[in-house]
Length: 170
Image (cartoon, rainbow, N blue to C red):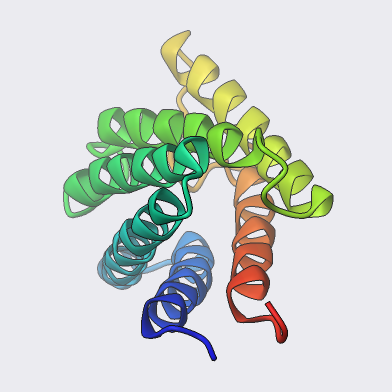
């Protein structure tokens, strides 16, 4: 039987992935900020629960990774209402922490290899995006190909985490 925490975490990851991707592609500033706020809150709740789960299981690196993701998502939430251009500093900090978190969660063999690979690809794309912004490239959170190319890999990683939480016979 699945725990309530696992179901809530899986739901938060699903909402975060869906609303986050949707927010990247909408034209309306107000709708994007609304979708990203819902996405951010859902991911903070999910990663808080995952931090507790993996800490109780004694998997400190994975737990710390989810806690780091929570910190990054909180930075993203803090800048969200400022609009795309004004949010760039908190965005860069947030995706930097996402990248670190994805590597931390993926370093141990806790999750299936394909999930760990999608996480590392997302992390690499976010690190390149951060470097570009720090070196003067005028990237926004919605810019393509970067950082937007990292989002599908992040969502695939979320799908893997959801599958891990909800799969039968675990």
